[in-house]
Image 1 (cartoon, rainbow, N blue to C red):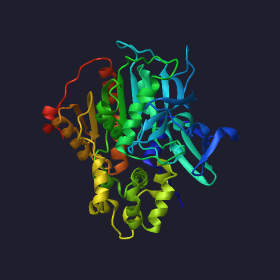
Image 2 (cartoon, rainbow, N blue to C red):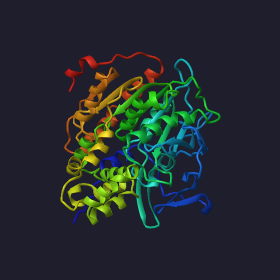
Image 3 (tube, helix red, strand yellow):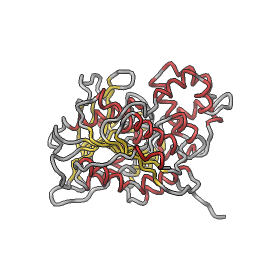
Image 4 (cartoon, rainbow, N blue to C red):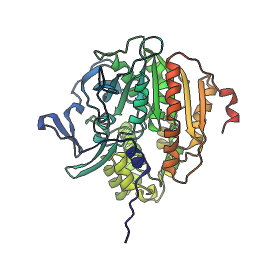
Length: 444
C-alpha cells in the first residue's frame, strides 16, 4: 500500500531555497537555558534590570549564519550580530527584545550613507526556539529536546538576502517574547510589534563597527505578521520614535483587522495562529483571562498550552484543518465569541491598523485571492490611510486562487518579493514615487 505524506506549503517552499538542516542548539551547559521545555542559548534570558532608554542595546554577540559563503573581504552576504535591546510593551512596561543585525558585504551604490531596513518577520510561532535570529543561525531546524519536537524554518532569509545584495543594512526583530525567556510572544499585538520594529532601528545605532550612521535613511519591510508589524510601526513612528528617520515601508498582506483575520484563518493549515493570538491577548490584558477560561473547554485549554511551545511548522503538522469550535465549551468559534463579548471585541478593535496616518510612503501589497489573511481587510487599511492623507502606493497582486488558503497567502510573498525589495531600495535611494490613492477605486 502506498503511503502519501502531505508536505505543508511553507515547508516545501523553504526546501527549495537550500536551507540547512540542523538539530536544536547543542552548547555547553553554562551557555544554555531551558525555556518551556526547549534548550536555547542563555543569551536570550534578559537581565533583571533593563536600560532606561527605548532602543538601548542590552547585549550583542557574533551570529553565525546558516547560509553564508566566503568572500574576498568578508563573508557573503554579510556579517551578522545577535542583539538584545530594550523596548516598551503595550502596558507601558520595559521589555527585552532580541534580533539580528547584518552588515552587508555588498556596497551601497545609492547617494548618502548606507540605509537601514528593519525586517519584521512573518509568523514563526510562539516557542522561544522559533525566534528568527535562531532561524538565521540554523536554517531549518528539525529536532527534539526534552520531549519537545520542533520544525522551524528560516524563510525570511529570502527577503533578507535580496535586501543585503543591494547594499542595504538589515536588522531583524524577533518581537517581544519570541526568543526571550521571560514571557510569551504577544502575537499580532500591534503596539508590542510596532515598538519592537522602531526600537530595533534605534538599537543598531548603538552597535560598534557598522556603516549605519545617524543620517542613514530607514525603511521597513514585512509580510503577513510582519506586514502588520511594520504598518503599525509606520503609524506610531511620529508619537513613539520621531528620532527614527523613516522614509518608506513595504507592508505585504497585513492582518490589519483581526476580527476578519480570525474568521479567515479558522479551519485552515494555520489555525494554530489563533491559539498564539489568544495566548498573547491574555498576557497583554490579564482581564481577558476569565473570558478565556469561561469559553475554552479542556481540549481548548490543552491546545493553547501546546501551541505556546510550537513553531509554525509544528502547528501545521499538529493542528492543520482544526476548527476552533472544537476548542470551546459552547461550540462557538473564536470569531463568534469575539462578536458576543464586548470586552474582547474592544480589545480586538484596539488592534485595528489603519486609524492613524503613517509616516513616509507605504506600499501596501495584497494578493486578491488571499483568503487566509483576507485581501479585503488589507485593502481597507490602505483606503483608510488614503482618507487620512497618507502617502500610499496600493499594489493588488493578481494571482488566481489555487484552492489552498496557505498557498493563496504564500504565493504573493514569492511573486512580489523582488518588486517589493526593488521598490524599497529605490525609495531609500531617494527616487520619488506617486501615490495611487486617487485611482484606488479602480483597483481590485
